[in-house]
Amino acid sequence: MNRTTKFRLPLFIIIGLLFVLTNSCVNTALLPVVETKSITAIGSGTATCWGNIPSDPGSAISARGVCWSTKPNPTTSNSKATTIAGTGNFSVAMSGLTMGTKYYIRCYATNKTGTAYGNQLTFTTLLVDYDGNTYNTVTIGTQVWMAENLKVTKFRNGNTITNNLDPTTWANLTSPSYCSYDNSAANKTTYGNLYNWSAVNDIRDIAPTGWHVPTQAEWTTLINYLGGASVAGDILKETGNTHWTGSYASATNTSGFTALPGGSIVLQNSNYGFYNIGTTGQWWSSSEADSNSAYSWSLSNNSAQAVNVNVAKQSGFSIRCVKD
Image 1 (tube, one colour):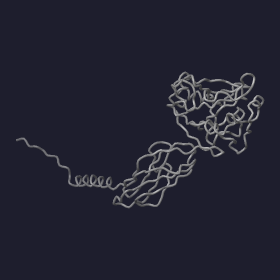
Image 2: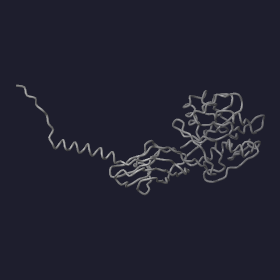
Image 3: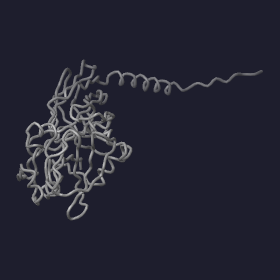
Image 4: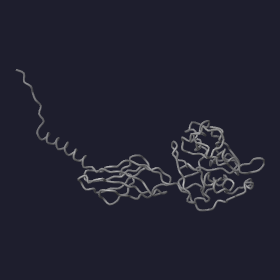
């Protein structure tokens, strides 16, 4: 006679499994629901986050706040700030942030079941120079760049950079100097200032804290990331003819760099003068070519190219800074 043997789990194991499964479901259900609502009052090192816990999950909220990081999906093991525990809307002030830096942020809430996180938001702290000018920034590849030209009139320590108004005097300048194109306040607002290389190279630092004037190698990294010098110009330039004049209209600005044709102070026809606003933008590197010249990069309205040129240090060009 054939007999079928039936396998039975011991009763205590069955009860244990039911307890684990039931407890797991209850714990999941009791985790708080958290919303990351918005970020306001963004400064150079501070910001305020607003969040919400819509309802009581059945277990008292013991902690709530916001956590942040420069990497996605921050947790409470990263930087955090807290507020009074409870449900409903709340705000938390963040401090100690790095200027001109992109942050990932999530609100969180903790009860006896565990910690739950809200949706992720991002924001970028303001980049501010010594004069209080603020700048947009953009991440391109592994680098973070200013998306506007520098406007500052003082070094990082507060020392004033000389404002040399007459471009014909720039031929003999050996001290740090700047001016706006045609000494126009409107041009400074749009295009930033023009600086000689002595201002670039001064040990007092012209760039905001945490930033610097890019080296020739850092410019080359940018240009290569965008496909090389033959095409990078169009990818860097602002689109349209609001600032760039002429008929060449293939600029895309897909990099977000938003290069503008701020012109320059250069030697032409035996004299230094203001030239080429609307048609050319030229930016210093911090790298010296020789005792009389330094490297720069130039974009023009009639070409897709980015052109590397070593030029006289007395020239006046725009500056874009890159994050340290």
